[in-house]
Length: 434
Picture 1 (cartoon, rainbow, N blue to C red):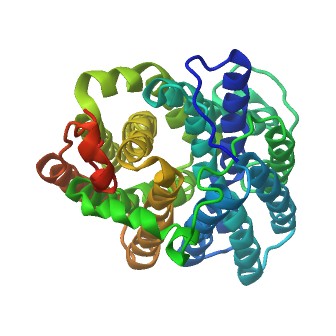
Picture 2: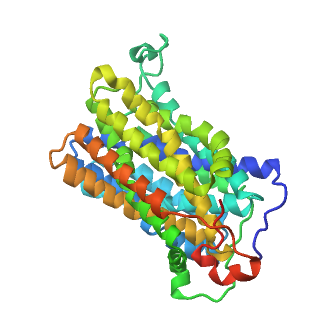
Picture 3: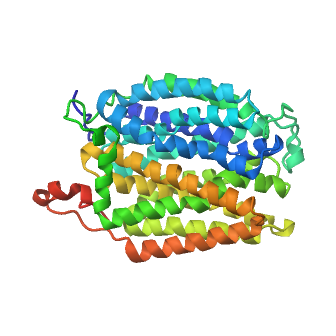
């Protein structure tokens, strides 16, 4: 098989199929993960259990390089891998919706996340492989993942009793309990089936390393670790991993926090951030990358974490509730400017045959090891240790400020080396661009 070459002009049909892929792939997760903390709390789960079930996503990320580096890079077309993972994940997520025993729920959701989490990196790889200009094309495709994430708010709104209960127009809705129930997991299972069907229509993306001599390190995706020879990439990966400590505080514990301060419609409220993200990713991210370069785009994304937790820290009182909403809205800065820029940066640094593995490496560092670390610190050490939400947010702001300073001082990007020098040192990051 030959590698897919990015055509000078991506067709409209391909572009919209890739956008649909991103839309539904992120909606699968958003429809249930945002309110799962409130759901578990309603069943009497401790913060430790909430953290560990939140960790199923992180543990799923740890096996991402096996699917991305071994399966998608070497043996099977990426779109076919997406079909299989989504179908298996659908069955597991439906099964999880019937379980309330902590250990059993943890085990089933762990298997589901092992199938689901690699799809993020594979979706990025499919989009990049079929793009003519990654910096231009990827934001306009990936933004539909944010749109899909936000669209899941409609479930909670449509299932409400009356919109007037939430300060909205007096419109009677379905009056079906949603947030805090198992129904979101059932919806996620149905979306997984749709995602599998959609994957059959994606452009054929054969494995870029097919037929090449392989080693154990190739099969496990370990060769992407050679990128750590570049000091700036090593700093970026470390900051990305530690940045998940404050990010996990939001991802896992924001819904029980909002419930504790009397917020209704948790899923729509938490989707304020992804709603803002849509516009920033589509309209501002390409401009930021061109105008400010990779380094300062990443720094601004890290600064967003500082701003979010300062707002949460001050937003506990009912009279300052608007600060919580602003803190959620800041997610629109954090995700595109740090996480999406990080994927673009990795694509610039990595040699062509390691690009999928590089995407998987970032997924491991952030939503894998970083999320595990963050949930352990925030759940076991802080919240279950008796620390108040207000103090937890202050701690997250301090951690974020420290990481921002590390990026400013130690992260540097270098112009590309001449073509005749680049080959030997590509894995060390010679292809960074600013």
